[in-house]
Length: 177
Image (tube, rainbow, N blue to C red):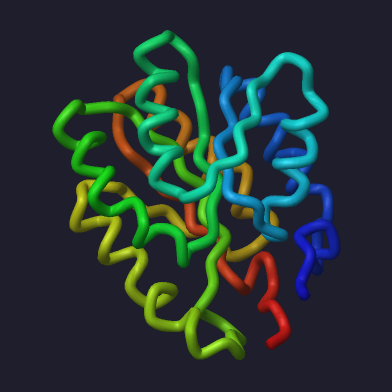
């Protein structure tokens, strides 16, 4: 299984990403356990100044972060691309209520994918999210991560948009199947 901490190139980007999120005022981390987000999850669990919530399904994170926004907090939803399909109906809450939403998706079903069950959602995730009004940005190289997520934070926290950053398989690596 590919491990985000063993990413080729710059293995420090996951820690830099956590620091960026904290600098942006993110205090709520909603996640479904995923190796692609291991560093962010582990760091959020160890940080006494944030609330890190393990979800049973991804759509719970949409409601959790809408509530965080109403309470004056900033949050991020961490999930694998295959979980995006679970969120589609809940994204109508974001669109109808005009809630800001930041999502980081570790992609599957792309470059080098060996699991045929991951390919359909991996190929459809961007179109599905965009159909629900979510802006999708892609990070394919370590040097893309910080500027892309920084731009996403501006779009979410300053203009109130819903933005998903797709952390591609070229970036995080393909899991063995």
